[in-house]
Amino acid sequence: MTATHFGDGNPATPRFQPIIRRSSPQEQVIAWGLIVFGFLGLVIGLAIMRYGLYREVLICAIASTLCFLMGYLTLRPRTVFDRSGIHSRTALRSYDIAWPDSRSDFVVGRYAHSIRRHVSSGAPSVYAKVRSNGDVVELGGMITRAATEARAHQLMEVELDRIWIWAASWGLVSPDNPEGNRLGEGEDNGPSHP
Image (tube, rainbow, N blue to C red; front, side, top):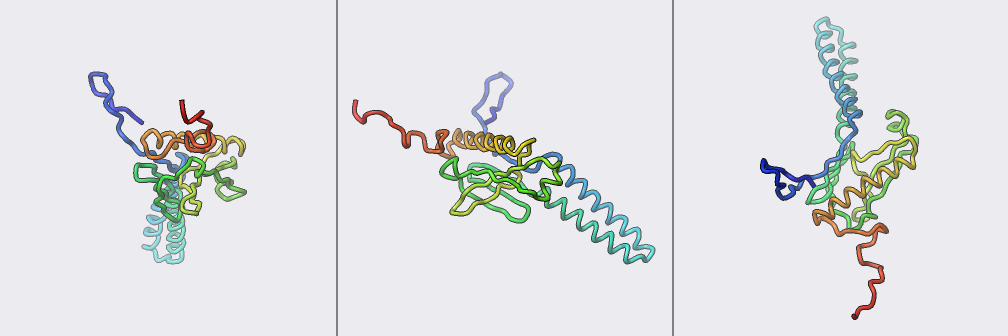
């Protein structure tokens, strides 16, 4: 919902821009560091190969491959919200999902005592999921951390509300009331005649 401004100060019509969510900046820095270490390991392996130390070259190749893989898997998760739907990449899979019928189809999941939680400062983490065609799909890059799990859950719900309001403002979904029902559905709108 950004407006483009021209030199005369009058805003032009709003220009549609998709919402993109991906790994946190800290995770991206770590991932790029792993990729750099992977390249460094390859260079060291090539230098060692000149001396015929093939076991050490193999160790460098394995370490480099692990660094590349971990960096790639950390950078890969992302979700794009646009006019055609929700396009999500997790570490291992990709999903193209139509916009759900209701805001209540977005749910918040929590990481139990997982490796991700311990690697990422030990703070409780939650992630976003969406119900689609009977399945529940995790949205890549939609992770929130906070001091408490309740606060992380609250922050993710606010983020999902913002995304739903954005989609409703562009006419991609029908607006919901806070209870998750379509506006006007289940409400007493008064008598049907004047």
